[in-house]
Each structure stands twice: as structure tokens, then as C-alpha cells.
Image (cartoon, rainbow over all chains, first blue to last red; front, side, top):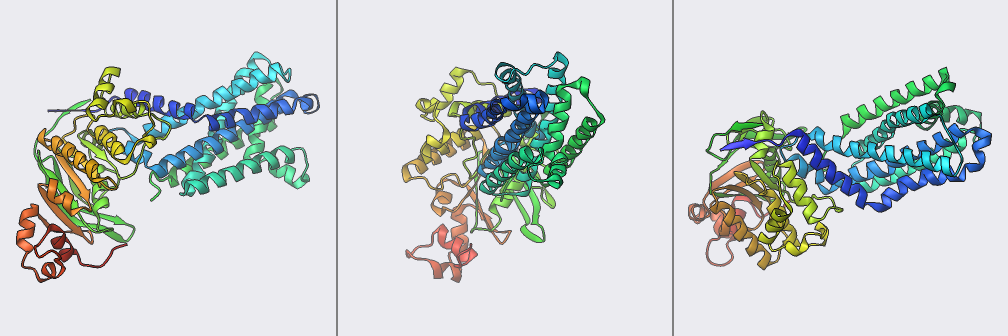
Length: 249
Length: 261
């Protein structure tokens, strides 16, 4: 008798297929993570001339990243952990990292889709036109910054076991990002809050994205924002992995 | 990847201990499951059944001792050991968005089994659920869910099948039907390890049982011999209700009357 271990590529293909189906059939969540940034982009049409097209687009993408990481990713991870989906997969002959890699890959694909939709809507509705290099670097920095919000979502799931508490906490953090981040960056809550927002996960991602969408205007401020984005990402991902438990019992 | 496996025993648990922090949940537990045998693990709530099963499944690492599935160490060669076992967990444990066909394909895939559309249909037909192929798991009745779970646990034809309280919450008809399916697994030469609270189930389907309490195995034998060995125990006689000694009397006599949380 011979023992056969499934090949990693076959396992990943199977997991990706199931995870894609899960995201695709979860239409309410999908609409939420894709529509919110698009609605923000459309509603900010009048601000394009005042604050610049790159800032408008970067803000919409940042909110989209927060939607995916905080509303989509953390919620499904918390739910599936609570239902024992991960434990069921972990008793199969698959390395545990493949389970999480598949989940994250689908989210990265969703980030790419959200970014492309924003580029299209930005062009069609807000008449925002970037250079070809701007679209490419913008997409690359978005994919990098996406890890920050996925890492933050992972950290919330790692620190909180109850799925309902994860949902409410994620929503609270999300709303805080939208309200404080979007309004605070323009000084609506005073100078001190503006400085805090600028160096918050919202502010640094938005700044790095704005710079990447117009790469020829890249400054040392954008470099600092990008480095801070990477720093936040490393901390969130490291703590999110360290404290994550596959089982919530 | 392939590897040659040793044949017997299908499962060998050798003096394992499991700790949660300072608390020792499993204390030097040893047992083995042979081919063509249904082995029942019985115990009150919190006795260490699920911890023992979790260690066998590779979900928690025992502090001491060794677990081998058809010769493969669950800690040293987890993928090979897991490839030789099928597991039915207590919880629902499937994504609610997936249909029964999706779930079947997912678990066939992670166990390295390729199933065509026709094969998926045939497998579902075997458990009389061919009409439920496009239904979600949550839309099935308890009995249907257990049939799907058991089908998935055996989808790769494993040498060892682990069933954690498989008939909990089922009506008598569904329970009988599941017993027949478990016996069919035994008839094919597979080893089955199941946990249960039902003494009726243990007596009806298990070839051997182990009673675990406070993390230790306190008795291990065939149901008939356990009854025979303990029928004169004063504790067993004192809890007897029907004028004859049953496995439940032996169980309560050995583990005590106190209700566990």
C-alpha cells in the first residue's frame, strides 16, 4: 500500500477555487467592498480640481483597501474559524500555510479588481487621466499597501476570538478611518489631529498612493509615507501571525 | 510524493499526554485501533476525549508520547499520517456559501482525489443525496449533513476513520442508517475510532471501547467483557436501574454519578 500526498500546486488550485467561490457568492460583502470606494470617488468629483486628481483617487483606493481588509477579510476569517472550517482543512494532508495563502491571494485579486474599477470610474466619471507609468506604479503601491489592511484585519482576528466582536471592532476601526482619516487630513479636527492622521495607517497609505499615481512628482515625503506603510505592514502582519489561533475555543 | 507504509496497527497511541498551560487534559493515554475494528472512546464531558482525538488528528501536539497512523508519526510526518486518516469533526465546519458539490470537490482536491462530474454524482447517489448536489450544507437535515460529512471523511479511502460524536442530534432512523455506514467502513477493512456519549451506540457498533476519565483510560475491552468484568462491582450495582447490568451502568459506576460541566 502506498501513501500519496497531494501536490502543493493541486492543493492550492483547489483551495483557490473554493475561496474564490466563497467570495463570489458572498455578494453583499463583495458589493460593499467594491461600491464604497467607487461612491466616494464619484462624490468627490467636485474636489478633483481643488485637492488634485491623485489625492482624490488615492483616498478612494485607501478606503477600498480598508473595506477589503477590515470588512471583508477579517469577517470571513473570524466566521470560518468559529465554524471550524480551518480545523476541518487542517486535518487534511495540506501544509497550513497553503490555507492562508489561498485566502490572501483571493483578497489580493480583489484589491487589484477594486483598483482597476477605480481607475476606470475615475477616468469615466471624474475625468481623471494619469500617465501609463502612474497607473502601473499606482497599482503596484496599492498591492503593497493592501497588505497593511489585510495585516490589520488579521491582527484584529488574532486578538479577538468572538466573530461578532471581530465584526463590530472592524466596523468601528473602518468608520474611524473614513471619518477621522478623510476629514482629519484636511484639518477638520485641528492641526494636531491633521498631523496624527498624516502618520496614521490611513494617512501614510493615502500619501504613498497619491505619490505613486503621479510618479514624476514623487518627493521625499512620499518616500517616508511608503516606508511608514511598510513599517505598519510588518508590525501588523507579524503580530497578526504571532497571535492568530486556528481555533477559537 | 509517495511513501511506503507499514500495515499494522492502523493507529497506535503510545502514552500521550496533553497539556493546556498547567492543566493536564490527557495523562499517558495508550490505545490502538486494528484493521476492520470499530473502537469507541467514551467519557464524561471534559474527560479528555476530544483532546485525545485532536492529538491524533494533529491539531494539537502532545507533550509526551507518540502517535502513529499506519506507521507514520503524526508529529514527524504529519502529511503522510493525515493522508491515511479521514476525519469527521463535531462542528459543521464547511463554508456556508459552498454547495455540496463544491464541498465534495474541495475535499477531494485537498486529499489528492480527482473526481469527474459523473463521479461526484455517483458518490452523492451512494448516500442518496444526488438531488442535493446544488444545495448548501446548511439547507440539509442533520442526518443528511452527517452523511455528507462521513462521505468526505472517507473520500480518499483512508485506512483510519475518526468520528467525533457522529450521531449526536440524529433521530433514531438516521442514527441506525449511520451505524450501517460505519459498519460498512469496517467491513472494507478500515479502522474506525469514534467518540460517543451514547452507550447504546457503543454497545451496538463498537468492537472494543475505552473509557476515559480525568484524562486517563480507566478501562479498555470489548463491551461484553467490560460488563462481565464489572457486573459485581458495588458501584456498578448501585447505579443499575433495570435489574440487569448494562454498559451504561458500568460507565457510570466507573466514572461516578456527578454531572460534569
